[in-house]
Amino acid sequence: MLARVIELRGLTKRYRSRVAVDSLTVTVEPGRVTGFLGPNGSGKTTTMRCILGLSRPTAGTATVLGRPYRELDRPMRHVGALLDPRARHPGRTAHAHLLALAQSNALPRDRVEEVIELVGLGSVAHERVRGFSLGMGQRLGIAAALLGDPDVLLLDEPVNGLDPEGIRWVRELLRSLADEGRTVLVSSHLMSEMEDTADHLVVLGRGRLLADRPMADLLGAHAAVRVRSPQAPVLASALQRSGARVELEIDGALRVEGLDCAQVGDVAFLAGVRVHELGRITASLEAAYLELTGDDVEYRAAAL
Amino acid sequence: MSRGVPFRSVVVSEWTKLRSVRSTWWCTVGYLALVATTGWFGAAITQSAPRPDIAVSSALTGFGLGQVLVVVLGVLAVTSEFGTGMVLASLTAVPGRARLLLAKSVVVGAWCALLSAVLAVFCWFAASRLTAVEGGIPLTDPGVLRQLGLQVACATLTGVLALGLGTVLRSSAGAMGAALGVMLLLPPVLAILASDQAEWVARALPAFRVGDEAFFAVQTSWQHALVVLGAWVAVSWTVGAALLARRDV
Image (cartoon, rainbow over all chains, first blue to last red; front, side, top):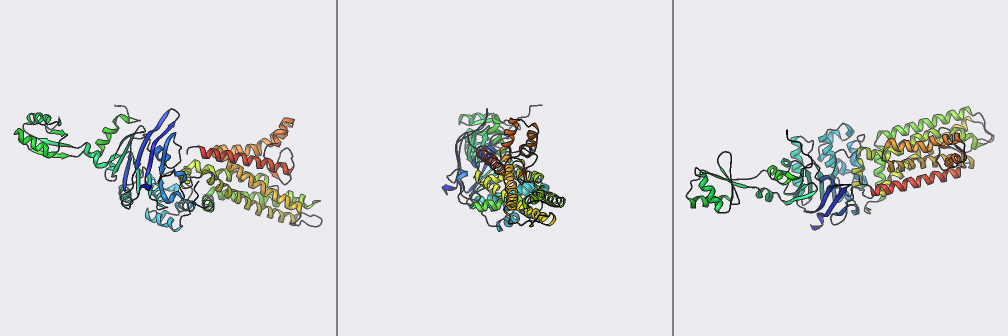
């Protein structure tokens, strides 16, 4: 199991004066979907390119299955990658594209038809990819990644351009691949895509690691308790004395951080305060993410 | 290097890539048509020749311009990878970059050699039918064989040179310009200048050759020409392989 992981040790990539990835140390574990998040330009793609040996790190190392990618035997049997939906010759048919890749790793020819059917491109297999939509291109890229039935999958923005049905299909595919014990690293700049898919999150901002923790943890850290009372000021000071952080919401309810529902209820009881509403609010991943990356957005529109 | 995959598999994959794009077939058809028709006419207008190798020479005229298409084919085999982004998929599948380039060179070289061999035999056939030589034009005549072999060798080396330049420059237009510049454009310019320095430079350039004759260029022996062309191939290929191994894609 240990050998399946992707391991980054102090990975750094500098382009002239710009630091794209800044001493990143992360281990991607098998058996779960790891979401790789960050705003545009935060270094996700550069990191993936370094893992795949396409770019040479300025410092540090990236290993897959304990070895640098370039030293893997038959890499497609171990690692499947979707980097760029344009990574193909537009004049080639989907079938020829996949066949050439399969042959280069001595994979059985039948595998080409199998993955074409799996991603639902059977009807256009012998058409030139020039005419493919972005969504079809993504499916072809996913087919290429799955060709070698790999233990490790790296997918860069796989749902870009997919329709809702396609997005759900990718989610279920990633889920089932992870459940089979594979290592799945999937990048995105959109939180909503990750919320239902990833078990674990690695968040980048300006090339630096902002978070590397389970999804539940990240959401939990930003969770709070909402309590409404006709005697809000009394309850608020009682809660503060118990060490909670309390904020007044627009509708007059209190937002309490640092205590769970039971503790808030107990505090209210001891203070003799009536409670009309008490519940836990889970932060959306979106909110948690914005809080994490707030200072680290590379490209931001100016306020109007 | 990925030792697990036999080199043969990478070659087969490169052949699939080459045969599955249209430009390959346009170049192939153009090359065959140009060299064959020129060869047939060349033989037809040469009613008689004193020696078999001279008769064959006139039938081989088309190889000169035909090599333009060999250059296009060789350049596109590699620059289309960079131009389209296919190179990302290719290098992820075959991380041993020199290995990938070698497989590509084997495929391009073999394809050029095969086409040129077919054409050379066709040109010999045209000459043996249309040009009168005392004692005929036997294919086994050493002079004839040398002329034909020289064409096949030049076309094959030209294809690989184009591939090497494409790898160095990573741009279709740039690599075609560079290849045609040193092979087709500079040699006649230098020949016209006719100074000692120009002649010296001309001798160091790979020029298209038709049999023993250089195509609009300062004349050199065919041995000299092969060595010069071979050196250009070796240098461009080695520089291309080194850059490919070092660069990020």
